Image 1 (cartoon, rainbow, N blue to C red):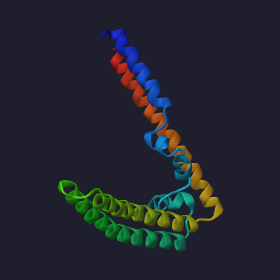
Image 2: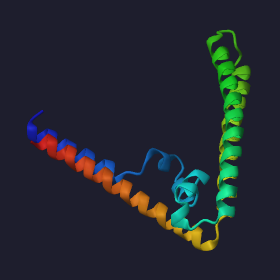
Image 3: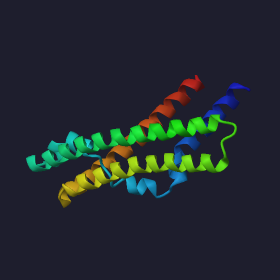
Length: 165
């Protein structure tokens, strides 16, 4: 492959990388729209001054975060146990398809339980904010996404320039 062909291929790859949606966006196109509106209690606490959170709000968010961590720890233990059981079944050549599917459902239920608990935590955190604070959070998230996209573009440009030299 000539140097020119390599540069052309890299330029094409960089263009595609910047123009294609992420894998998660392809798998679930509405996910990005949902994620724009969800922020963890930790992230809200990290920006308590910017959001002008009251002490009551901070206390509620801290309590929410502690409870969520504790609950998720227990749910992850369940997930690990169910995953080990599935692995055991998969290693057993005599395990039936029905048994493997049933255990797979248990694994997926455990994963779903974790996601649901995290979502409840986020919704509870969201409820502690007033309308102005929620607007600030949405604006902040939009700015962060734009920054990440711009950093990704700069990195790809640098890589392209390095390959062209």
